[in-house]
Image (tube, one colour):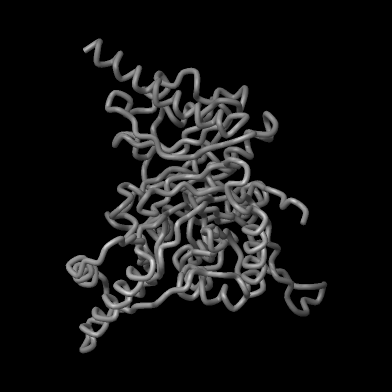
Length: 451
């Protein structure tokens, strides 16, 4: 089998893109926001936008960060910040005539807007309405996104196509007359699974980044009672044995729109599935998403099998009419490789990979990259402070070797930043992050010494 090519999804799409990366429209936003504070204000898309692209945000980004992006030839100056009511999503703010007028101005008028593409984080009904009102083609399929996002449906759909998923039991939360029966069923399934494997995983039908995933290593009736009490009516949960992971790879794909065949439009030709990147996911002990690593150490996971399963999945999705981004998560164990879930949307892995591809176009092949969150001390809770601490490590536009590119600074004031680091080797990129931590500690000590 020939090696699957790796592409940039942004470069495949026409320019300009209108990025509306609003995580608050996710079906599981409430659950995610409990674990990921400030997720609504993420500004990850700023670093991957091209000069002609438009980025729509809830709030202004750090001025020093925007100046740095511009100075190294990244990002766009076409940024639209939309004020609105508390709790109003970015997508709904775009439904207001005043917001649409500003957007069309940035695109150069309604005629040019038709040449653009509306690129949401997750395509929902509201963004489809925005697309229709503005006349900007939508990249995504709202009618199918929620269907494929459901883990129960997706795993059974995959099994029918010969792609293995971990054997499981399904529990539906019932607040009616049979509520005690549902609770008893959940307790029985967990107890049986613990007796068989020693560990159990409970996963919500809908979830992102491990936000609805619980790993259980001992039976606790009190915990199950509390869990059941806080669950919502008709919530569906998967209960499955905990398989020890050898690796947790993810595969990112783009599916183009369906097109009509021939001049007369007889029949349909399904969209084309394009491989973007297959990489190693970094997960915490509680199975929460923590970042991505490319390419990882040799032999860390069965890349060929993961890509083969992924290609089969995305081709079938295209045949059903899906178009848009697709992120597929897998688990590699001693028992084999299993598909875990489908994210029919942008995923966290897209942003660092797009940055890597941009820098490769300028400086040549990047040997290895690592993307993850870094916790910063109080003395560096601004981008200007970070520039001082990482003087020799921040990308300066001249080389992609041994450099860091911050791509989510929305929570910097709270002490968190997400960066992608690049080096010639996986060992080199890990040393780069170690050096970044040491430099922050040194900056912190110097700052405290001056006080």
